[in-house]
Length: 144
Length: 69
Image (cartoon, chains in turn brown, red):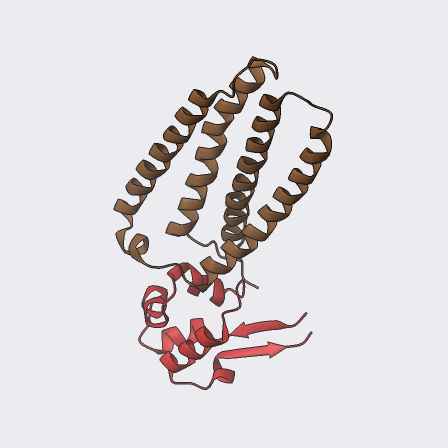
């Protein structure tokens, strides 16, 4: 097998954008939750809303910039390899999500504050999404 | 686990030095997917394999080779 390097496709770039933006923006949100402590009161709804809005703005803006530089690839539909890579990534992310939810259900019984539990579930969901993007990036880098 | 090898790189050059991008457009995949197939990192679907063999006007077994070792 040869080891020639494969250039980054538009789909791989969007996977990187998704992974890095979620790591950065949700990282700030969860850092603020941890700093506030589990008994801070309230669900940080304003903070979460700002986080989601910031995430959407960053992802859309960066994706548009990338698409401007490769318009042909950006307008092309996903091919069979892109779909296979996405399916594999979803399988890994689902396994992580299911395991994490099961653990959260178990440990949730010992952590009464609903505020902490809601953020824990959100953390699990975000982690699963990051896992999905990370798996896509890894497979694209390997050539899969 | 068997290994699938292919002659795509050689066949591209025999067909007027066809680029990966040109082949990709003919078979409806991205250039990166053609590259991954050529390098043996990705095994295409049967349909994509047939499309490739049609582009080169060769039977499938002259484009792809399977060895069981």
